[in-house]
Amino acid sequence: MAHARTILYLCVVLATLVISKSTPQKTIKLSSGHEIPVVGLGTWQMPSEAIDVAVTSALESGYRHIDTAFTYGNEEAIGKALKKWFDKGNKRQDLFITTKLPPIGMRGSLVEAYLKLSLEKLNLEYVDLYLIHKPFAFVKDKYKHQPALNEDGSVVLDLDTDHLDIWKAMEKQVKAGRCRSIGLSNFNRTQLLNVYDHAEIKPSNLQIELQAYNQQREMREVCSLRNIAITAFSTLGSPGSSSDKRTRIYKSLPKLLDNPKVKRIADAHNKTTAQVLLRHATQAGIIVLPKSTHPDRIRQNIGIFDFELTDDEVKLMNGLDKGEQGRIFHFFIDKGVEKHPQYPFATQLKNEKKTE
Ligand code: A2P
View 1: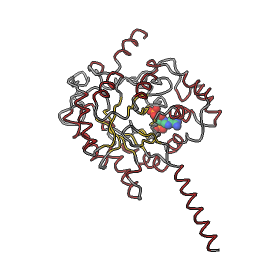
View 2 (view 1 turned 90 degrees about the horizontal axis):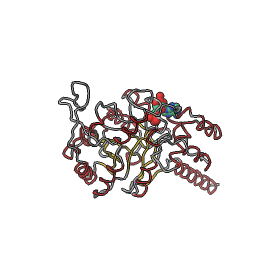
View 3 (view 1 turned 90 degrees about the vertical axis):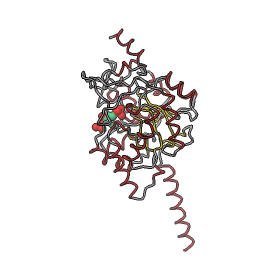
View 4 (view 1 turned 30 degrees about the vertical axis):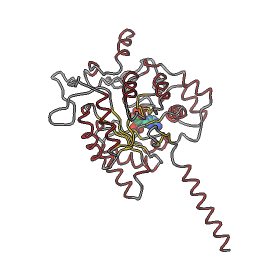
């Protein structure tokens, strides 16, 4: 009898181990040696009041990766939600937290101070990934951590931007243990290669807009050859901001979440269009950061590992790509940004003017 009970007990332990082995999210190994979960919670435009519910329901739904940035203004709220999670006995090492150096911190001499500020707000001793948020730089306002503005509302550009000097300071942060991996965001091919070719610690991640209308084929090739993992933002087509005048998307395209081709694939799998869009990216080895403040959508957005797109479906999804014409974000939210010498999409702007 005692023997049977021991066997039963061992079976339960084994089953628990199997379940807990399969429940953790899929991860990708970065060139730094650290694992990044392929689905993270995006938090851009997520107000501090919404963070507690969003972060807590994400963690409870199995997310282990949260993405923020100094400029999002919600690091402190994220830090509070994380503390609650740790107070319940959960461990820091099981989470992957990303934050980013703001354009007002784009000098080698400022990197450490801005990372320390982020760590203080997040209430963490290190972040898993620290990214240079954007390749261009702004002068800081005298009183607050915001860009200084000219009288016409345009940002005051800091024209003296040296990516290699900034990268050296990023590398120092890894050596000091304040971040585990470092990378770039919104850099174009030339800017990325410049950093990569001169780096002692190579960038292990590039975070860029990547969605079905702008599939970033060229950057994917460049990164795959160099073992740089790609993290996509706006994989759902950023429905919350595509009607915003400061962003542009190829006018005749339907909203991604309403695209009839995506809808047809979703129906075939009994999934939502959001899940198909996220699955399409992750199935190709891309890390995604769907943002939602609604617990049901947060759960839905990570429910993408129990189905697979067929080769024909992948082909159909690949066919939605419009390249640069499908880009949503040009950063015009910062008036005058395109005049910065490191503005990454200059060629695209010229082409667009011709066709508009
Ligand atoms: P909400 O926060 O109200 O849920 P992206 O990640 O492409 O930037 O998209 C984020 C936007 O998509 C947010 O406006 C979010 O709205 C919305 N969203 C997130 N998940 C879903 C979903 N599963 N279905 C529909 N809309 C979603």
